[in-house]
Image 1: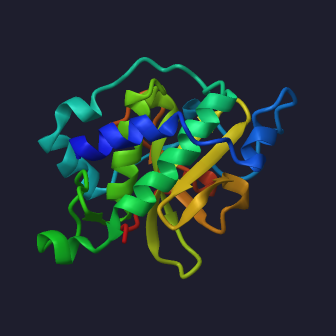
Image 2 (image 1 turned 90 degrees about the vertical axis):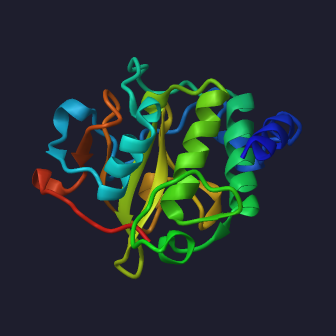
Length: 210
């Protein structure tokens, strides 16, 4: 993973900003998107974290320690460039593979080296962005149901322009409101070990990521 980190950090600053993000990061910020995930933690009900996440934190406690909440991230053109390039880099470097094939377990969260499940992509992107100076409170692991009503994990980027999704199935960075997913739950911005429900009425959500 160290080799990929070095290559990734070197490349992030050399790629031009895609037109869509040059526009999104201009002076006139787009409105906060409608739909799930736009509220603060105080307005969201607590829920149970995924079992795989709990086990990951037991193995990597430093990666799950609370960090000072920094609110929504103020994005610049350079930051959009880094986010876009990082999402594409990880998606291209890591091959999709199930936990069952990789580890012989139905659910095992880990940093991938050559292959991983959806949550492994999320962990790696979150780690890279933190190393690039993005606050942990704005990089939240999120559980969704996809178009086939199956469990999936994405990384939510909470910005002053709204909430965006980094997804191993798409190189484009999409607004939450534009993603064809049902958002179930995510990490708390105040404490990454705690999770909050994104379902209407604070309904407890539990879905196995694939």
